[in-house]
Image (cartoon, rainbow, N blue to C red; front, side):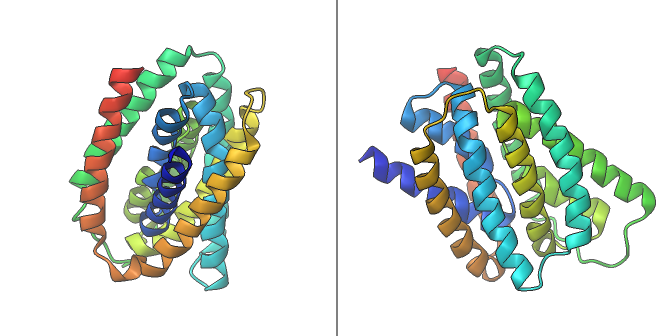
Length: 247
């Protein structure tokens, strides 16, 4: 039964990643921790390669369909990867309990952020200024640090940053977010290489999450993202409460 629940959770994570360009990755660590009985550090080490593979699947599909702006995506990926390497190094110096507290706080912030921005929509009306591009890259570095420290992909921050600073619509920002998450999660996973991981579990969850990404990407342009964000914000709020109580 636990295996089926883990598979279902991985599918949900992938579907949310494909729909919103993030969000689902925030839930990966608490899901792994709750269902597999791991502490936060080991849950992060297992979750990062799952997130990287799932995001890579979405990126490749978007690229083949001509939906990925490769130049901006590469720039943002470099920024998030640099931050992720630093974040993973910081994480090795933190107590597991401290990581749990930071993760729970991140989930809470993500829930509030998704709820408040659920109705924000912007069309691409003009090219980003140099200042806006710098702010986007700075945000990418910060998100990467967050990935390394608590294992979240950070799409809930990357997509709004692309909308605000890059001038993209939310739908056009999703493939770029997936591309950046691919590299930041993979980089952070290397930073956790000393933490033992059950690679058979990673493979199964990655396959399920990748399937979810494909399904989410296929229907993402037909659904109202505001409703999805509202529902997921409530889920994240519950996950945050669980980590706070169980840390």
